[in-house]
Image (cartoon, rainbow, N blue to C red; front, side, top):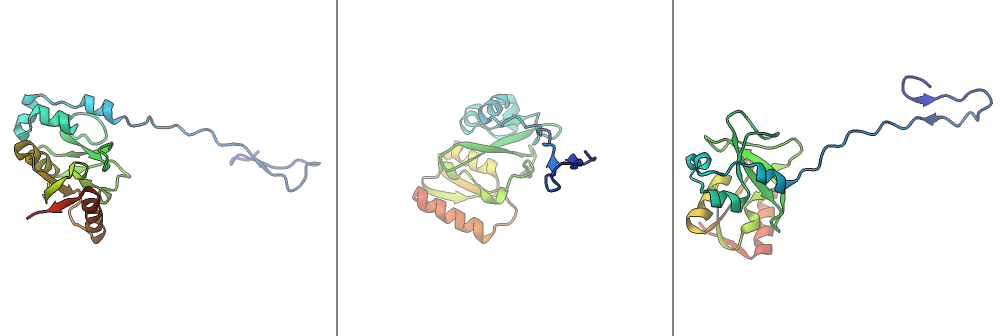
Length: 173
């Protein structure tokens, strides 16, 4: 056997029968549990008041302040759920507490998601910040969505149009 795990035939073995040693199993990452993660988020009035969020709104949206994990920076960040159209949490992104700078884990394709699309019905607006989507819902019950990227591609517009068709929603200005 050489350094690469290849077993070379010994005399008397068939010349075409080179065998390799199976690779050791790779360590598997624990599966992300959105419900467990949501339970770890801080939703007290004191923590959220600087953002204008009420604790009950944060719990309804499954968001809150995180002080741990991949999307954490020192001082905490607002963790926001990214949901499919059925409302199932697929990932979390985070927003700076002092502005709309978003972070997400490696491998997350922000351009593939429209924040708040799972809650669309009737008329809605497009805003720039996921926090605004939540605050509009909290203040008025009106619906809003936002793209998670700085620029908006034609593909993202097509995705929103498909969502509007599926949800029977209408964009208002």
